[in-house]
Length: 185
Ligand SMILES: Cc1nc(NNC(=O)[C@H](CC2CCCC2)CN(O)CO)c(F)c(N2CCN3CCOC[C@@H]3C2)n1
Ligand code: NI
Image (cartoon, rainbow, N blue to C red; front, side, top):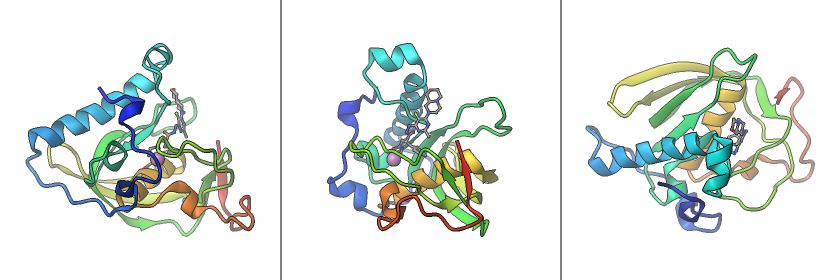
């Protein structure tokens, strides 16, 4: 089971590397990694278990964050009232094949399990993306995501390219975003 002690923190070079593509069929090791990352998210979203294991809650987790420089990330965006399409899957070799010109950002800014400090500011991302990825069976998916699930997937895909959320913050004016940027909870 992945615990906070297993989460690699900012400063470790693995978080700044380009991860390696994953080949199919998955090795046992890669299958276990996929399962463990999704299990972390599920446990962390259960208030009792989250507390019991001393976890930070998460809606996404990328393999480099547990020291594995592989193109794999787990995403578990819960279905909250209002959001039509929650997104749950382990995305392998993900590629954003198209995106909106319009930007989107979380009004709360972003955090990261690998970054222990708060970094205030808006993180401008694409509001809508078309994402192509393989699931753990090797099947290829092409999905259109918008708003919250799109933000989460972009945060995770960034990790696979050695990018951290605060790289996107305008440090001269952290709360500046292009006009037309959609801000959401
Ligand atoms: C937005 C949010 N970020 C949480 N944490 N940070 C993360 O997930 C980091 C990734 C996210 C940071 C911004 C975009 C992606 C982890 N990252 O570093 C992986 O690369 C949350 F925990 C959270 N939610 C809302 C849903 N809630 C359901 C019930 O359980 C609690 C849970 C809390 N929302
Ligand atoms: Ni992160």
